Image (cartoon, rainbow, N blue to C red):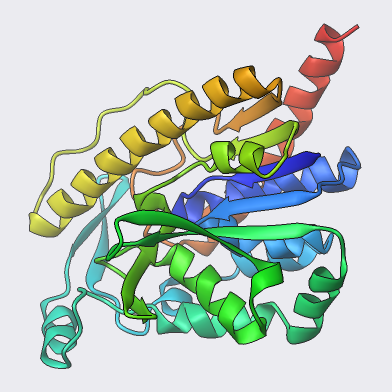
Amino acid sequence: MRALVISGGGSKGAFAGGVAQYLVEEMGREYDLYLGTSTGSLLISHLALNKCEKIRQVYTSVNQESIFNNRPFNIKRRNGYDQISINHFNVLRNFISGKKTFGESKNLRKLIEKTFTEEEFYTLRASKKDIVVTVSNISMNAVEYKSIQDFDYKEFCDWIWISCNYTPFMSLVQRDGCEYADGGLGTMVPIEEAIKRGATHIDAVILQTEATIYNRMPSKNVFGLITNLFSFMLDRIEKQNIQIGKFTAANKTATIKFYYTPTVLTTNSLIFDKKQMKSWWQTGFNYAREKSEELNQIEP
């Protein structure tokens, strides 16, 4: 069984889309299992439908308003990089309305349903492909995996959205008495789960460089500090997921091909810039082509 696994990474998902487009359209890869976390969850349904160009158009046209109905931060570009600061008015408005998070991402939920239609959902349900998204059950202290085969259209759109909710900056969602948030808070790269579900050949797109090659800029405010702390924790989770995935693959005789970002794309994946994301998509496509050519030269 062949699986495509895409890690979390916010706006960097554009790079993963480019990689996957090359693998699907140029290499002719067909996958039985598509497993994604956070931004990866947004990609996999369209990739399974072979609608790479459609999802490329989505990723290269979104902005902050496409994601947030209440954005908790402001963005200012200084000295060549984007700096975020707290939007006190929006955060206060969220707290006054009884919300538990700094911001809300209900616009993303609308975008998911707008771009992933009910007809497409049932086309995938009828196929032999399994589409699985990762979510974090905060109440039960557990990571859960939601398959398209187990839910109706509205419910599965909800799980895709929940997988992407980078709490506390985005929405916290209650289901069946439990609080759910971004799958990356528990599992950034669900390689182990792919192997548990029977995958023997895995293409894993990792939205980080293979080696740590940067230092984050010093925090300018409490909001910047919080995002840096969360980024640090998610980076550690991701490295552990990869190590566990490699160990599990070795014991199950499964093979993994990794596609890391060749350079640091951004140190703040909450910033959705259309121009940048368009560039990252092309970078991912070119990188996958170069890596495939290198592998062809190495393999007899």
